[in-house]
Each structure stands twice: as C-alpha cells, then as structure tokens.
Image (cartoon, rainbow, N blue to C red; front, side):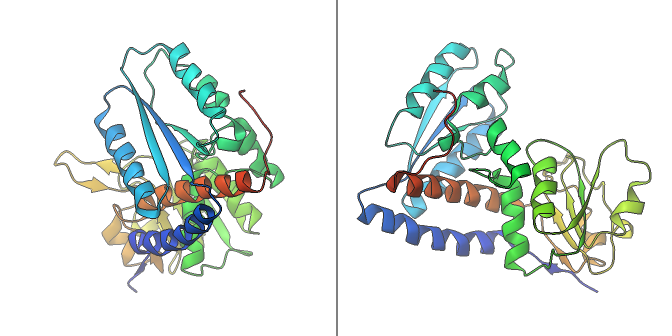
Length: 292
C-alpha cells in the first residue's frame, strides 16, 4: 500500500478561490475584509509567517496591515493598539503573532482582542465555545485539518480518532472538533503509556507534538488517514514533520506531507475566519464582545 498524499497546497488553492468569491461579493456591498497583524520582536520565523499571511490576504482581496514593535516594546503599548483595532470598523480580524517576548502576559494579550475579531481563535471564549458548539472562530490549524479531511472525504462518523498532543492551539481544539463530528476520540500526551497501542487503532491520526519522527509506520493502522501537524528543522536545515514520512506512506491510506500539508491550510482558514467576520459585520451580526 502507498498512501494517497493529502496535498495541502492544492486544497488551499481551491479553498481560497471559493473564499475570494465571497470577498468579491462583500466588496460589491461596500465592505472590504480587513486583517491587522501585530508582531513584536525580530523572530525570523515569525516575520516569514507574517509576510506569508499578508501575501495570502492580497491574493484574495483582503486588506491587511502589519503593526511592528521592537523586542523591548511595552505591553501597555501593544494593548492600547489592540483596543484601538477592536474599535476600527475597517478591521474585521486581529492577530497577534506568537511567540511574544517574555515581558508579555500572553493570556492578557489574547483576551484583550474582541471576540468578534479573534480570527486566530485563541480567546478563551472561542476555545470554550468549541465545547458548547458555538465558537465564533475555530482555531485555524485544527480548522485546516478538518478542511483537509473533508476535501479527501475521510469519514469521521464513528471513526476511532487519536490526537497526539494536547496544546490549546492544536491538540485540545482538534479533539473537540473531531468529537463534534461523531468520532470516538483519544488524546495522547508525553506521559501516555505505550503510545503505539493507541495509534495502531486509529482510523484518523493527528500528530502535533513538535518532535521529529515520533510516529513511525509500524505505529500506524493500515489504511489510516494520518495528518502531520508538526514542523521541525533538522540539523542540515531540512523541514520534517512529527511523522516519519517514508515509513508512514507505506502503511497509511492518506498522509499529509511536511512541508505542503497543514501549513497552507492554517493560513487559508485564517482568511476564512476574516471573511466570515466581515460578513457578520456587513449584516450587523456580532458575537459576544470582550476586551473593549
């Protein structure tokens, strides 16, 4: 068996084309979706991510603006900018690029963003909303994973799903999204005893731990759909995932590559959340306000 490669680049391109149609429809009504990105410091990876987000916005007609602050920026200044953006009718989404320098209280920063503009889906209201099934904005990476699974018509109802990793950004919301689609979900952590005993039973396996090759082919159920969220750089500069690609592709039924898998979909769902925010603005609908 050789796995079908779930091409995140191709899925992202098709998905963005669909969202561009909605952007064009909004512009006909006089509304241009707007995204504001705040970046603090000179982290090279963060700067690349921010440039990629701005480029993606431009490609489908979303207005984007980048607010840059030095490494030693005062948290009060960044908080003041967020509060101003919360009230700016031309901005429908606010994103604070992580990580932040150590003088920042990340929770305070994220919770200051209005729920109506929290397009990254990191506010406690949105994370908690996943439990109740009414999150205003799903977190972008797990949202992107679900879009990939749907594109390749992976049946989730009744499936045994295993999520390896329990972060608030990916693991926990991913498990809740799968659960909402009637999958039977297990979450594995670094303390899980006999990890392979769980992963070998998984019809759908999502791995997000930031450890190269933690999942090998012998740990995968034949025919499973395997989504590799990890992105790691080796000593020779190569980007690899959390799943050993070569051994996994000989066993899995479906497999995402790294790079070119989940990454493009994360940005795509950020665009989707921004457009949906603008659509709500256009009809006067809002979520629950916070941070204003």
